[in-house]
Amino acid sequence: MDRRTLLKLLGGVAALPALGKAIKGAGIKSIKAAGKVLPKVSGMPEWFGPLVNKIMKEGVDVSPTVKRVEDMTVVKKLEIPSATGEPEIITLTKNKTTGEISIETNLGGPGDTPFELNYRPPKSDIDLKTGKEIKEPGEFSVVENRPRPDYTDPGNYEFDWEAVSKDQALSDLERVEKITTGKIKNLTEAEKRAAQRKGYYDSPYDDISNRYPEPDYADGGIASFAYGGLTKTVPPVSGPDPQGVETLFKKRYS
Image (tube, rainbow, N blue to C red; front, side, top):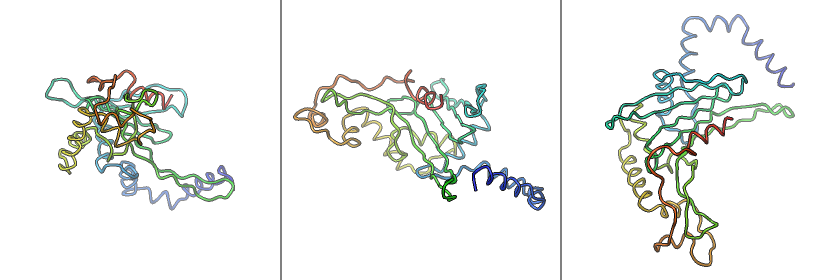
C-alpha cells in the first residue's frame, strides 16, 4: 500500500457518520483543547507550551505574506514592560507545515544578547518499502551566543551562536518562565544559572573548557587559558547582534 492510498483510506474513515457524531458537542471542545497542548519532547520545560499559548493569544500578528505552502508561518510579537522603560520583545515564529516553533527574546542571553528557544515536534511517517511506521522523537534546544576555541589561533577564542540543551543553557530561562507562569518553580536552578552566566562573562575560557575537548597543541591552546593565555577576542557587547539569532532563523527557513 503506497502513501496516497493510505491517506485516502484514512480520509474515508474520518468521514464515517459515527465519527461525525463524535465530533459534535463536547467532542469539539476536546479537540480544540488538545490542539493547545504541544506534544512533549526531551528537554522541553513545562512552561514552554503555556508560553506558546500566551504569545499566540496576546501577541501582535506580524506574519509575512508568502506564496509557497512550505513557507507559511505565523509570526507574533509580544512586548513585556521592563524597569528600564525599554520593553522586552518576545517573537514567536511557527512553521505551519512542519509545526516547528522558535521563540526569540531580545535580551537575557549571555552578555545580555538575544537567545532563542527552538521546538521541533515529534512526528511519524511510513516507510513505503516496509509499510512500517517511522517515529522521530522531536527536539528542544536553546540557541545562544557562546565562546568557542579558535583552532586556527591557539590561545584565542571567538563567539558564535550555538544550540545547547536546557540544562547547558546560560540564558535567563527563568525570566521567561516567570513571564509565562508568574513565578519561578526552581529558585536553586535559577541561582545556579545566574552564577554560571556571570562566570561565563568573567572567564569565557572556563566555559570553553567545560564544553570542548582540549585540542592537541604542542603549546598554547585551551590549556593556556587556565594560566592567563592571551586572547584577542572580547565578550559581545550588550544588545542584538546583526548576525545573531534572527539571522540564523531566517537562514533556516529561507
